[in-house]
Amino acid sequence: MDKKITLSYDSGKAIVDVPLTYTAELLGNVHTITCHVGGPPFPLWLQTRKFELMSSLENKKYTPLFNEINHGRNLDTTLFIDLAYNNIMKAEKLVVIVAAVAYEPLTRKANQQPLPLPQKRDLVQGQPILPLREHE
Image (tube, rainbow, N blue to C red; front, top):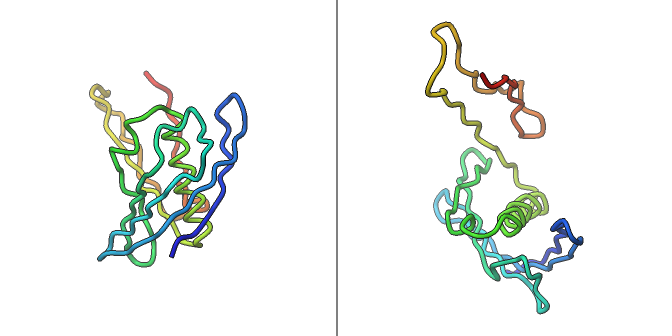
């Protein structure tokens, strides 16, 4: 069943309301949302009319999956697609977990410890709170 949502996106020049129609499908543990942009008229900065948003489902919680096709466009289009994912998941009342990635710098001092991964107590509304460290 098709569902509709309208997103307000600020491209830096103007705030534009963009209507979307989407369908959701769950195959195994992969949740796929297929979105179609309503129109015309279409915003000039939006370089796609159709895109897919994918998540992995585990223990009734969703983790977004990277989709290279969605990120090969301009910055406004990429940010709009991210906004669409967030708003659709909220509208559907689905719990999203964002995975934190810790990495080791290529050069580090012998006594320097890597950033710890966030613990459950470090999560605020599903978003990790990472300690800040100055660049050396």
